[in-house]
Amino acid sequence: MKIYRFEDLEIWKLSLIITKVIYDLVAKERFKHDFVLVNQIKRATISISSNIVEGFEKNNNNKFIRFLKISKGSVGEVRNQINIALITGYIDNVEFNSTNDKLLQLAKQIGGFIVYLQEKRHNKEFLRK
Image 1 (tube, one colour):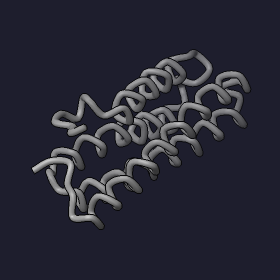
Image 2 (cartoon, rainbow, N blue to C red):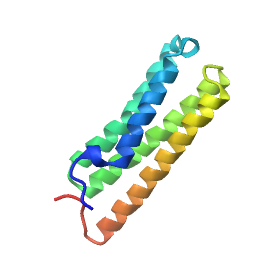
Image 3 (cartoon, rainbow, N blue to C red):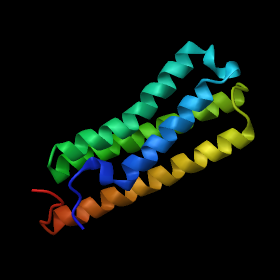
Image 4 (tube, rainbow, N blue to C red):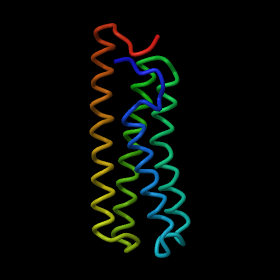
C-alpha cells in the first residue's frame, strides 16, 4: 500500500492523540504554573508529529528515516518529562501510566516503521516517487 499523505500515517495519528493527552495534562491546575516544564513538554510533544510530517514531505526515504529518528527521540524526551511531572506531583500514577503506555506504543511503531523503510531502502524500493 502506498501512502500519499502524511495524514494516512498511523504514527502521525497516534502522535496527535498523544499531543491532546499532554495538552490536557499540562492544563491542570497543579501543572500549569511550572512554565518551564510546560513549555518544554509542549515543544517536545509538538516535535514528534512535526518531524514525522517534515520527513514524509521530503519525498526521500533517507531523509524520512532521519526525521523519524528525531521524532522517536522526542518521544523519549516527553517520557522523561512525564517522569519529572510524576515525581514532582504534577500528575498521578494513573495519568503517568496511561500516557507512558501511549508513548511507548508510539516509540515502538516509529521504530518499526524505521526498520520497514530501511528494508525498502536496502531493496531499492521507495514509498513515494
